[in-house]
Image (tube, rainbow, N blue to C red; front, side):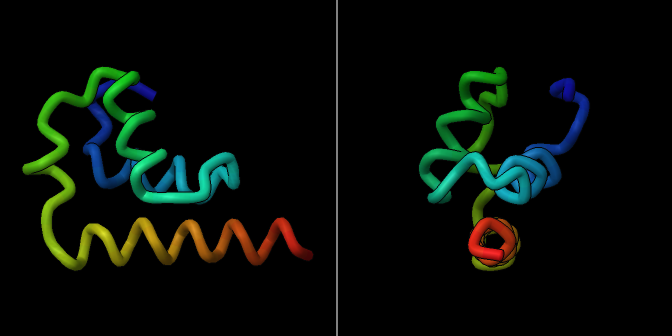
Length: 64
């Protein structure tokens, strides 16, 4: 992925990957990928809800 991908889209992709267990881990990964404006890009209830839902779906998939 490139930084041309919106931060929220990338955050949901990372959450859905099953490699992460928290929103904080995803924010750290995004920073490592070069996303610099996360406070703005991922602010608000809807953004966090989308990430959390993707994390839960990935967790459910891991459990089978």
